[in-house]
Image (cartoon, rainbow, N blue to C red):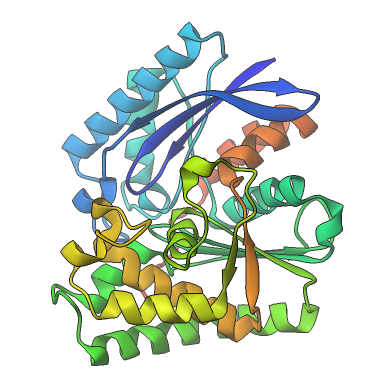
Length: 328
């Protein structure tokens, strides 16, 4: 069985085509379109008309590639950059009209649940009670659970790109006062979720997303080309040190550090502040870096539960109001 998924994020549209052997989605082909939607749409702001056209074209191209490779229509979803846009419905209609693909503006809690499923399947039952952290461009997802799906999941407006816009401004590098103000705001937003995680006392912590992968690489973890089966860990102390290194450098110099790409260098500091604060407030000293995240979670849920859950999720997401997102 061949499947495909399209992930519309703040920087890229990514198509993954996978063969499902014995219930495991094994990727066979990946294509990326670097749209950088977050550069055109302010956090919580509308997606401009031209960016919508580029997005619709990218999803149409992705569907065509999936068809040529023998996969059915892709399971397509968008995260915070579209989910939080006031013109979200117009974006979804434009994508469907151009591509024939129903794009789901994935709710934040659903994103956390699906990412948790991907991490659970990767780590297995030996992980025990599991807490997950995932930092995107627009939001931070946190989930905790003992089973296949989490007991609780939360999505907070603590994405690296969002916080860079809202708190760090145009100063390069930002002032120490700006970084302290950002850290205070992140602590306020995380307080209740962190208290819940501490009460649950997880056995294993896991992190996903490019932000955490970059932080792990910056702390000495193996580079990505060593493959997904190399064990990578991230320590709270390592993230604390990364915050100090990133805060002292302008974006152009951050991009020369291991694991920090030029397009994401500006937001790398905010991501590191969120990562360190999340680990500190929850009492987590080290976490496993997991290569599986929301895309794999979508494929796994479809394999395990069939297509009806996706139809319900997409229908409910179409009807849901955009949430308030500003920290200030």
